[in-house]
Image 1 (cartoon, helix red, strand yellow):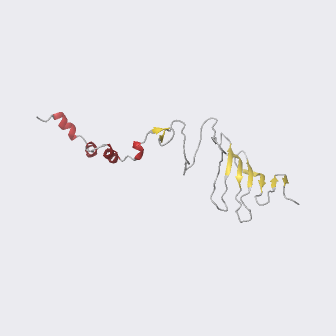
Image 2 (spheres, one colour):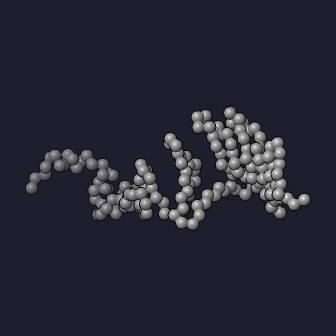
Image 3 (cartoon, helix red, strand yellow):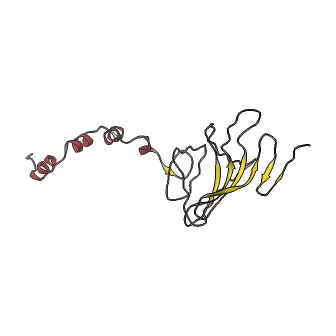
Length: 171
């Protein structure tokens, strides 16, 4: 049978990469040629062992670790911990160092500057329950630190309020 001129022209226009894909024996070989990983054979979905759909809510069945910052940005946003049984807990961890602190901040929604911070101060832990005291900090309209509103000493339980103090220490 004579060669078809159109097919000969078409075959000549296929790139080397195209030839390598066409001559793959099966779909596994084609995925390798294309450089696709294991996600190429995963189902998409919102829970379980699926590649998550990023345009809706997802259910995660195990711990998830993020190595970058996480932002929730929407009107009336909520971060909710809902235990299906037992307790709901949230932990904020910081490296163990004298200058390390961890805080929950409240920002102005327009200028994104701090108004309040609640959390651990940066007093080093030196033994005998010293350091890592609890504090509430207040900030100016420009986001500058104004003062501590309250501090609680971890070692002796004393609570100091700006302008006064309370202690449960026995005298």
